[in-house]
Image 1: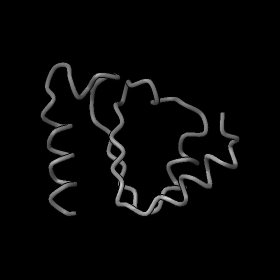
Image 2 (image 1 turned 180 degrees about the vertical axis):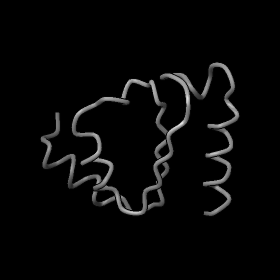
Image 3 (image 1 turned 45 degrees about the vertical axis):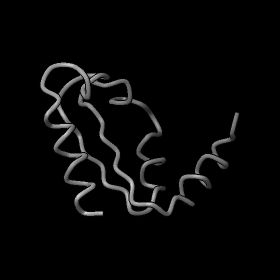
Image 4 (image 1 turned 180 degrees about the horizontal axis):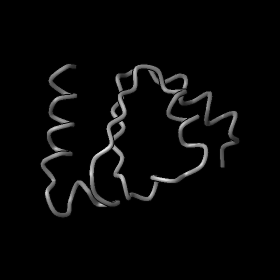
Length: 75
């Protein structure tokens, strides 16, 4: 298991453009400390979509697909 310092160092070292898609009612919606970790990643785009943990599989998946498609178009 990595220490928090190791986790933060790893996140800060990411060089690739990064997309983080979270669901308003997903598993990470209320996770403490997540913002600190996300803010450590340089060149990261964060997008929140409706739904729960399986927002990319259940119901209307178009919002997730559109976000990913638009992110990849930019890169």
